[in-house]
Length: 238
Length: 402
Ligand SMILES: Nc1ncnc2c1ncn2[C@@H]1O[C@H](COP(=O)(O)OP(=O)(O)O)[C@@H](O)[C@H]1O
Ligand SMILES: [Mg+2]
Image 1 (spheres, rainbow over the protein chains, first blue to last red):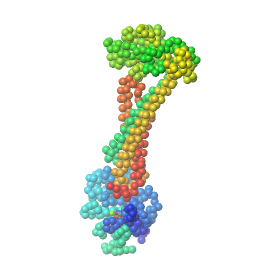
Image 2 (image 1 turned 135 degrees about the horizontal axis):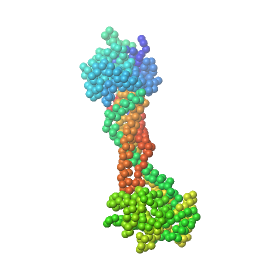
Image 3 (image 1 turned 90 degrees about the horizontal axis):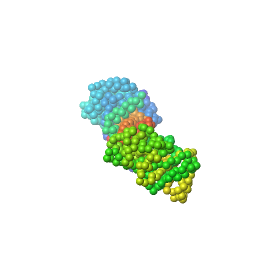
Image 4 (image 1 turned 180 degrees about the vertical axis):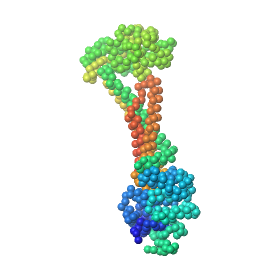
């Protein structure tokens, strides 16, 4: 097997709440390979989002090591991490998190701006990506003028803007009804087929089983079970 | 390259948050307008004083009665010809002359005005050198000019002193006598000076037949290199002449230099005060701007989280906010300067109309550029602190912020 694209080794994240300590993530081990579709599954409060934020370097771990492409992110400075977030990772959030005063197209162009892509290239790539998520006719609309499902598709296009290796999606369908949720999932699955690694956080076992290839089941900040789809059957693995 | 795009992003934000931007600009421009107005008038006063310093007045001293209100008002004080020649004989004095200053009744049709009538010796026009005003129309008085006068500037203007303006060679009724106008003085900029009338020392007493006319003051041209000593010498000689003990003088001798210094000190106090007010208003507007910037940052913490998650560096976020506040400062500065400039033009013209033309605003390129630069810096600095804090927020915390 090729070395892990992303690897968490004994990672922990503690929050100090006055006297007590909340162990949101507590000794987690995860290994994600190139081209995987991983679901991080668990009940609410089990530490899924915290773990994903650590992977995306949106947050810093209390303990343990996180490797991206074999590099310990602890050794990187703020500017390097920003570069990683901009180039290697695409985020999709439950609340979409589009910039309200920018149009759909401008939102998609934004990540490219921070990588110094020329205005012409940004424009043509944003148009291409919006076409891919079937929003060609909504490019000049503001987020407030779009439905939830449409906003999430803009967010997907934005996540793909700098052609990242990994897409991190935290409850991407959490704010959507089943039907629009399915459409979003179909896009993610499609991108995975085209070679993108996807890590999806969800509390919904059905969603995880239907779309992912690997499932990490989380409980109390630890990995409780690891499952892998082999010939349409889920099998534990080590 | 990236910078240009980020500037574009900032500008879009400012346009989007129109009312907030306008509010910030407004708070800055108030301070800048105030500064501009105060400094341009302060500069005008400063230049006014400086013009005097380089004038022909520098080598003059004056002798006046002590504790009087204005020359000619104190009838108990009398400088005699003997006093004048005592002054003239003092070492360091080149020339001395006595001046009459009387209140005169001037009549046009049925309207009567009381103004100061100044009598000086045309062969020793030291008072003209001292006050540094010139004839702008007609000619100067010369000895033998009986029945002739030079008028202050305001007599040339309709509805200023009288409803009808006077012109050269007209007659004017002073103290019941018709006198010929042979000249007009240039504008001084104060109503009193510009309504003054000038005639010769030989002629003036004939307008006041009832009482003896005395000199109200004396002016002397002296050795400029030794002015302090000369002033002391004159005091000593006059004391002797008038039979007074030291400390009991009924007169005082002042060099123009000294006079100017007191005047300049007073003006400087005003200028400092004015600048102080301006600074206070700047500080207030800076605090206001900072407050607006902090609010604006707090409003956008979530946005900061989002753009961090898509690859914005701390330095880029800092730049976005710094640029926004600096730009608002710049716009506020430009508008403030424009408003201030127009305000001073209008008030300057208004003050000139009232005869206070020495209160004229003065401008320099540095004033314009300085105000705009200052506004930009105020904006940038007051935005820098919240911008720095904004840039340091952890993405995860920023994203969770509502
Ligand atoms: N900033 C925080 N401060 C304190 N406790 C937190 C913070 N973020 C998360 N937690 C706690 O950590 C635990 C895991 O949270 P989270 O990772 O969001 O769970 P999940 O995404 O699985 O629902 C929860 O108990 C939550 O209350
Ligand atoms: Mg969560």
